[in-house]
Image (tube, rainbow, N blue to C red; front, side, top):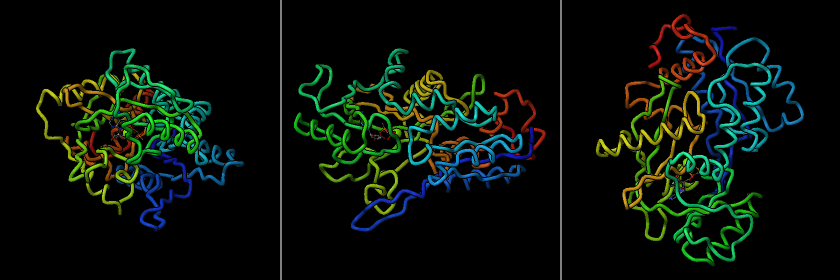
Length: 355
Ligand SMILES: Nc1ncnc2c1ncn2[C@@H]1O[C@H](COP(=O)(O)OP(=O)(O)O)[C@@H](O)[C@H]1O
Ligand SMILES: [Mg+2]
């Protein structure tokens, strides 16, 4: 295996465009993250190749595979989907497995299961990991199961990055619910997941490592600052990605979160259980809310979270003294260790040891 080289692979679907305030805005894409990761790897002494899988490559997958497998290098897998479909995220990891390529991050089963919010919640609940009550709907409901009480939140069953989540996602009446479920099914061509809306504080907890080296980083809180009346306090699509949007500026991450030690321990313990239960590898992020009753609930597990240099995971790493280059090195080191490549990091780089 070529120990000095790492191939950073990502899906390039041309960058998302979003209509905001009558203007078309081009949003950041994963290519920015790929650049960040490649620079961090270079600063750690690796040579890197950036390989994009473009939507236009759809009929030419063989070329992509050739580039990825051309020499026996490790792959840093940043693919969040392929050919514009998030459902294909797991297929890329599966391809890497089939070709015997060693790669960072979670495997296909974990990626596929985590993209399905309903299956994830079934698995978490079966291990007594708390998650909001829910129901998957293939059509607008005529009635509700008794355990579901308004307000509810309606999301696409198999998306992430807050796709399909805007202020209309939180519904208070049967009429609003039916309309929103219809909207999700029609627009996203998939079932809707309807969940109990957890009013309360929101936290992201990053986890890195595997087995004995697995650790939860300090919780990050998403604070909803001066949200206008009538707008639900959620990380909707605009709040997450559209930097021009007022909601983006009012959704403020703070890490480490200002919380009592007991809550921090609880958040970290639940994040570690969720990470292990879903079979995450090397790094992931668990999103949670703490209800007004003090009960903590897992909203979702992200086995392939944003790891750009300004994203939450990098911020949480900095809070424990791991700068960005050290975080990326830690991820590569943990992947190498899984493949039995002991000494991969120590021999090949001059930078910090993984934690
Ligand atoms: N059950 C819920 N109660 C309260 N807020 C929620 C709930 N589910 C989702 N949200 C809000 O919507 C955001 C996105 O939902 P999430 O389930 O994390 O999906 P995504 O994969 O799109 O990030 C969350 O960060 C949170 O602000
Ligand atoms: Mg989320």
